[in-house]
Length: 467
Image 1 (cartoon, rainbow, N blue to C red):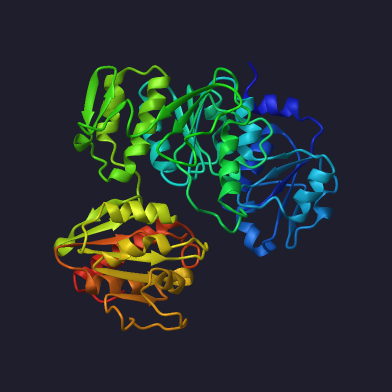
Image 2: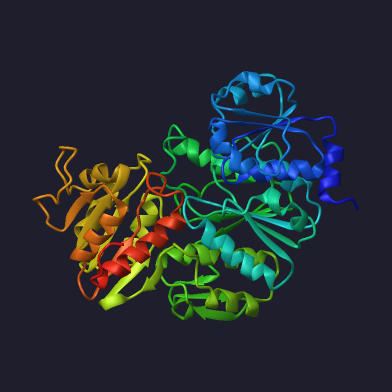
């Protein structure tokens, strides 16, 4: 059997691709993949040539089109590879669709051309990375496994390994699911639906419909896991394939004993390393998929028991001076923040909220914020969040702690906000970074934000000055 690069070359001989979007992950991975396939490509990105130059090292595109993106970027092109962060409303994509040119996402293009692995797709507003990481550990006990996709491992960089793997566990964002042409999974799940990406979708239903594309091309042998605890999902039906319901009121979860049960074997949730009840649906989804794949129960339950979670997702990074420091930097939705606060002690938790403005509605968190020992907001969205929590009046631009609550306030700079939070956290108590926003106003990613949070918190709680 020819390898994946030869198969793609044969299937697309004569095509010239336009890679639209050349950021950190998908665009450069697509370029490397097309070069290995021996296929020509052009790059289109709104950044300047100076910004793009470091990402072009070692690559040989036909052309690099930097700056404003226009329909003229399609000249000489027969197909488009679109990075998920780029909306389909930009001029080159609209023109490509009008001209009948295929517009592919990386998952949509590559995964259907893989012949060997069982493909598992995981989507949802929250919990995706936790679930795919756990599933990867489970599947690796039964065969060669690759975990990739929206978790920061571009699928096209993993093409050669995927082509000989037994299991492909893929994290799938709503952006990756928009207007798919053939993408399908042998087993798929949408963990939950909550408000997110309001700058991309006109309403929650449009966002939900994008997620539902995970089973748009399902076959009769495929299975979709339906979360019956989520009102937005409990009634959905794929066009083909089987449906298996999961939730906290049905097997393999025994709510009465707070335990997972798989073919006669039991695992109390209290025995799991990963604590925080917001993770129960993630663990349960992984367990049900493992059951659908026919895996033996003992190694599955052992893996779930020993799974410690993923970095920056409600991870305790230390307890200096009796303060439990929790890095939940990956929590970029209101639903995720609510779950984190529900797992922290009432009256003894100080939470940091803020970051890049996503225009999410924080009003539902007002009751939880009132039960916190302190709330410190920062960054681009911080002042608006304070107002929606009822902790600041309608006058913007204030940078001091408000008079109504001396334990709630806004500080623009993230590091200073961490130190302000450390100054008011009770001892013993809990210091929680669960921002509800992306990091991009002050940090390139949530990982760096989480690391800075831990470093600054440890220094401040030890009484050390800023560096």
